[in-house]
Length: 100
Length: 176
Image (cartoon, rainbow over all chains, first blue to last red; front, side, top):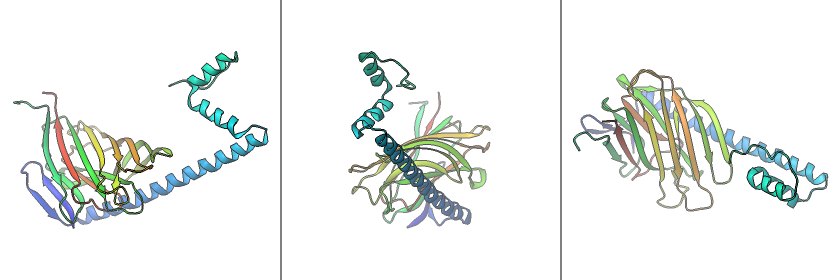
């Protein structure tokens, strides 16, 4: 396997060669960065899921059903529909940012 | 066309055995913008997505490090909104050997004003094709502080090497 396939865009010449020391170090650093990024993304997703589960448990403890909570989550993701529903029932109030 | 505004400068298909990276060197300084269209797959087996990274190369073959970017990406389940700095220019996602057979990710890099003496930006939209319930897509905007003209570009997979038939097309764009 070639380390580098280099295409000289002026001459059209294609060269297959090994990494230079600089390229090798950069490649290794890039792979380490990418692994760290993936670990950070996974940790952030896990933290979000944990926080959401805790919030969900608090709402259940207040007497809401899971269907109620799912309805609220759906409304939060679509403020326009939520506003329309509140208008239909005669209720008013902010439904959050309406950038949709 | 006597004065093409969108011209293929060079292209490369990875041959049997694969390659760790693809480098376009001695890029003509006669266009305003560059665009790279890549169809790529990496040898990674641990996950169905891999990064396709890039370095700017400046005069003398110097790899330009230190990129900041903002990205929105998803694995079809969770949306990640990331902003950080890396040594390399992170370019989004491609398919891997854990993806469906023969699936290749599609990525487009757009690099405006690559010859200017201002800092260099680029944007990327990409998708790691996968015939399954989970697949990656990503949109990135990035910046590198170099004020030197870009004379080359180097691409490589974040966690493996590029498999055979990975393909890179480099286009030059100008307004006349």
